[in-house]
Image (cartoon, rainbow, N blue to C red; front, side):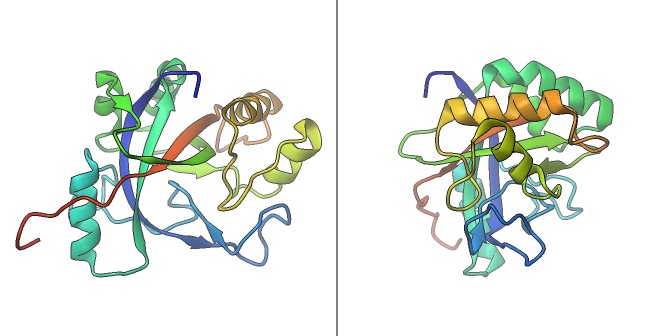
Length: 199
């Protein structure tokens, strides 16, 4: 990685299945995603208004307590250069739980021992995140325009390719009316946290 990334937080998610109607350019059968358009997320709070855990250990506790073997912990970070634009989007469209406060702190990401999974193209809209795989045809549009296509799990492996694709999507306006600003989110798999006794 060439750019500095900052911590967005950790999500506890189910690996999504690629539906029959989904992009032909996706290799399946599973999607890795931070977007609740594509995957079910475990909330931080009982009201379900925040899906961003502050640490991989908090996320691991929630994963363990949920009792679903299909859940996994996903680390998420954004390039520091992209944060001001994302903050503007969230301020305009509605805050997303604890995420804005965490982005202000600019904590280094990824954490020690986290395995890099790839980059997901995402954008914010009305207190939620869309992914390029949930808005029909965008994966194909990006490939036709740039030659870039996702690998396993719907993620782009090369950082520069991911940033090029995000810029192209933003400039194209094809996410309108849901997403106007696209960013390449870095996704990681943190090491399995050791839980305190009784968790």
